[in-house]
Amino acid sequence: VTRAVPLGCGHHLPERIVENAEFAKTLETSDEWIKTRSGIERRHFAAPNEKTSDLAIPAAQRALAAAGIEASDLDAIVLATATPDETFPATATRVQHALGMTNGFAFDVQAVCAGFIYAVGMANSLIQSGQAKTVMVIGAETFSRILDWTDRSTCVLFGDGAGALILSAEPGAGTLADRGVMSVKLHSDGAHHDLLYVDGGPSSTGRAGCVRMQGQRVFQHAVNKLAQVAHEAMDSVGATADDIDWMVPHQANSRIIESTARKTGLSMQKVVMTVHNHGNTSAASIPLALSETVQAGRIRQGDLLLMEAIGGGLAWGAALMRW
Ligand code: ACO
Figure (cartoon, rainbow, N blue to C red):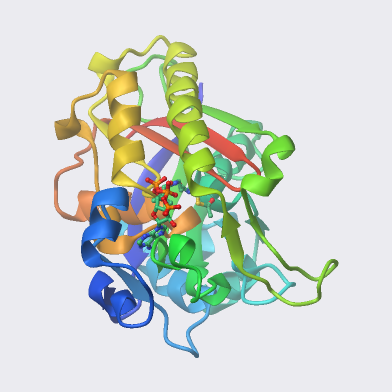
């Protein structure tokens, strides 16, 4: 069988760090509230002239360096974002050009916070079908551009950043011991649109709009759907919680992560947690968390990773991949 095997990853965070206390200067909120309700302590925000592609490009360059390959070795770039530089073209084509990649193709995937799982699914399918051999998967966001700074229930929760992962076709034995992507399970349900959306866009208001969220209701869906889809991804390849070395979850809220770990049967020692430093960076959160943990030498070759995410749509999914 063909496996989409990880060759390397990289990440980039904008320089500016904003601590919770900053928000208390202009809003009726506190470090204590934000920390206890979400686990978030600080987040990075892009500079006014820094676009999503400006975060994605260094992340992609670091992933190429970690993989030891050139941009010309890539057949495709799949970039997940809900905050593209422009309405079109795809931000992925900006990254493609900046890397000096003149062959192959690049496109964006829009599944908000679940975007990285969707993009891994697309990359895996391209590789499985033989349409591409080596694919760069990126999650990159500048959520600071779509926040309502007067809405304390949303603006304190998000951050900016980018992460990238390179997957490449290699032969596998078809067992759980193989390296690479084992399974990807994706779901969406547009009936839940009103729980989490942006109140603008090119064909509705003509402006970008701001994030609107019914946090508590998203929370309830998250804890149920994430545990369900995690089990679905594991069951489909006969994996159990004991087989998982690391859960690398979407970083929205530490309480959601703890609840999902518990329902999946994983101890917190096996869970990557970066939400305290990054906030919710939407599609960027999983590759950011992955890259930091790989760089720290905690995730090692051969480790089985469970990645999962949920966001606007609602859209959610999980992927199993052996590093
Ligand atoms: N500071 C102080 N008080 C606040 C703040 C704040 N920043 N924000 C809200 N409050 C108040 C509320 O007004 C409310 O007050 P009330 O009781 O007087 O009405 C009180 O705090 C409790 O609010 P809840 O919304 O019930 O708080 P909850 O414990 O649910 O935590 C949170 C809110 C952190 C948003 C949580 O619900 C959550 O994380 N939800 C999930 C969000 C998520 O995972 N999104 C993922 C996808 S994101 C994407 O796809 C873009």
